[in-house]
Length: 315
Image 1 (cartoon, rainbow, N blue to C red):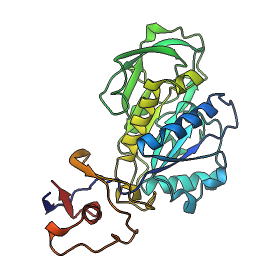
Image 2 (image 1 turned 45 degrees about the horizontal axis):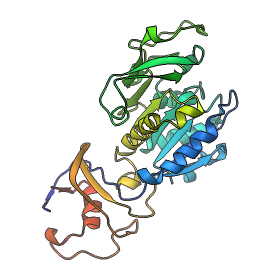
Image 3 (image 1 turned 135 degrees about the vertical axis):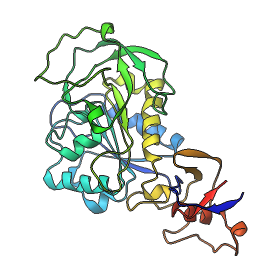
């Protein structure tokens, strides 16, 4: 291993990312929410992600949110946070926190500008639940497990905005002739073409040290939450968002988990490093033991901390 100075941001998983999953509903409540919780919980260890689940809006306070690398809204509905709680979430997102939304996460907080910038678009309506064919548009960790054409029973969401206006890149669309649009819009909305179904936002527009966001409108049924392709889709998007290196778990930022060093997997500007390894726990202030003098004597853990500060790169 050779080390040299750089001034680029490193993506280094120093701790297991911790994600707050919010499932509160004040309108329609999906009966798939317990299945979603069970699926995320059982798959978290496989992907080295720690989840906490809540429907308590008081969890959206500065001190509590600062413990999390990401917040994940799953099938929420209506105004599930009050004004001060929305403000706390906005501060969290501007501090580098990551946002992920699934299914009706787009059907809440309709008057929150920062939330719109995170989720990308608000839900308008959907036709009846029926088979539809979804088409992969872009190569991405959220779409690489998917077939090019994916037909299954799901709700096809229509939108009040075009998520591309929030700098979204569309990952999935739907073949319009594959389902019957047997419902009507609540207003005169346009959302662009091709029809957005899932997307990501590399740099949301709410300012500060922004974290990435990922959203998928899929996830209505219990069967979907038990489908391996869908699970890979959700975890691919979530892990991509977390890998943006804006939180403590990745050696940078002021929000996120820094309790335990889990692994070190370096990347520069989003490109994976050639090697990854495990390291001993370190305290937030530095490594558990001091490295020997000279760059060649640096331990992997201390090199990771230095790299996260933008001083070293691992080649």
